[in-house]
Image (tube, rainbow, N blue to C red; front, side, top):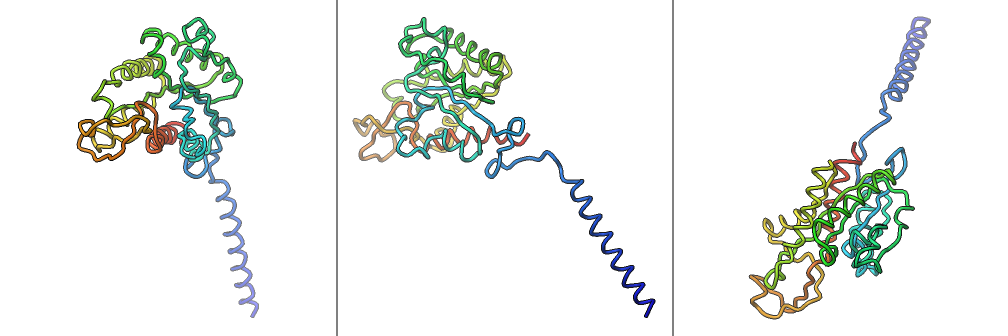
Length: 271
């Protein structure tokens, strides 16, 4: 009987030792740093704070025509999916010079938006200008202003600038004139600066080109202008088609959001 009691006590003692050891080593081996799934929880951003992203751009950043359905805007999509804080300073019709003090000397001086964007704390600044810049100055001046903006973000605001390219116009507008030539010339400045200054580039223009050339996807812009005849409806069937040269529709917004989400997942959030 005493032998059985000793055996029972010894067994209980061993079990207790195993439980205590498991708890101890489990706590010890749990890592302090771990990769975060961007679709579920990314709030452990910079220095343990939620990542703050500032958007600087024009109407394709603001997407004001979706104000009544804000969940369709790419800015709102990335904020939700990445669980980050997004502050959108995109304003329709604006160019790079419009947010710079030096830009007040340009022809667009009456469109200067001030320096309110500098007062919001940001970790990353996505820059997407160029569509309106071409109306007022050439690529050389665009490069000068973009460099100035990058310098402000890096040295004055201590943030990280990210350049982003613009829309691609595959159909049907190129039948009347090829807007892509101008868009590409300004986007190429961004590509050049990204390489030269070792900056990250989110090339949504390249994504839209691939969608058109590889998958035949062309309907990525809001429709506001009529298709005048069947000759403009190349191999498509559109009874009442309305197209806009540059502004993203719902699908266009989703594509832009996908590229930005992919960038953050691969380069920032899971680091």
